[in-house]
Image (tube, rainbow, N blue to C red; front, side):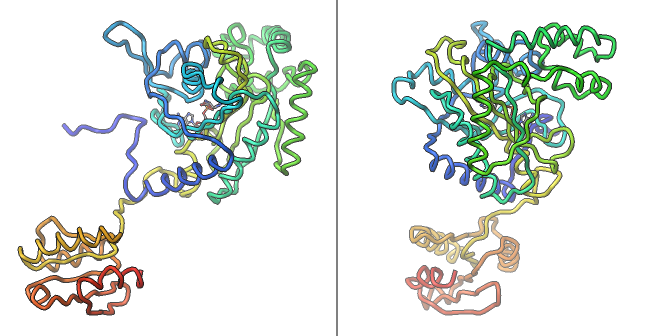
Length: 422
Ligand code: HAM
């Protein structure tokens, strides 16, 4: 039986990987300009880290984590997201003593056992950034400006910014009580999940997509009317800082997000091109209090994560992740006629590579004809046939594949010639 990849995971083959590299490179450049340094945390963490931070009653912790017991009976989990690990590392490595405001970014795989569909996978990749040590709403606007810079540099056009405030431990409890009372009155009209959430986490009801729940949800009190003075001021400054950067945002009172650590500002960047359900490209927000929750010093936090698969779907205009398999195009394909020419070609290739030339030698032991066919298929820029007479004379004919023009050069001239012509 053929062994296949696990459902919800995917290979990124040559031909597709170049777009991923381009996205990563553009992201790294943007992050550098805004003062972010890369952090790499382990893929495995203690389960407790996510239970405490993401929240025991979230979909992620209740049913989507890949959790195993190690040989000592400790529960460990493949990270479903990057924020909690970054905050754990920030605390563990005492980063608050090193810089007043830590700006960190990460790129890597995350794991959630969700039902796979277009734009939703079990192993997916996030590009994320976290700022620790500031509760200034200006940093929030700066983070969003950086994201807009990145998306625009990548040529993405069709996206919108949604923002909300989910209040803080001062004002949120009263709102949640009010929400619960209201929901209990409409218990008969709610789906089973909403009924459960009415008691455990009523805020999450706002996120429900079940059509029959919508009439109730639309009439629920909105958190904006319950914000305390400080949260109100924070949200209005955040909007002011966005406006001063000419960033348009739509206030979306139902934007509560699927993770429990958020306070005050939450946001998403959505794109209609992703379809009606998995339309969030970026999710983020403020998480003051998370550091303390994880046993660390008081530290305000704000950040985001962007789904790379969703970005790739948008940028490639495809409905699937994969593009046709393609290997890189050699600058020169050295075609060899016999064993002596093959050995010479190996040495020549290694000398050319030292001069920065992408030289390719066939190892499949194929005929000259099939080597030429292979050079064509790989889109080689030049070919050079090496046989007895070339070895004897020291003169090599380089053929430009685009137009068939041939030029004779000595070995020492090859690299310079290619540099001029490529
Ligand atoms: P999140 O909203 O759970 O937030 O995920 C952020 C983004 O990751 C989503 O908008 C989406 O593009 C992508 N994503 C999530 N799940 C999947 C999946 N199953 N398949 C494909 N893509 C997916 C967080 O993870 C927070 N840690 C964001 C954050 C950082 N908040 C503050 N700092």
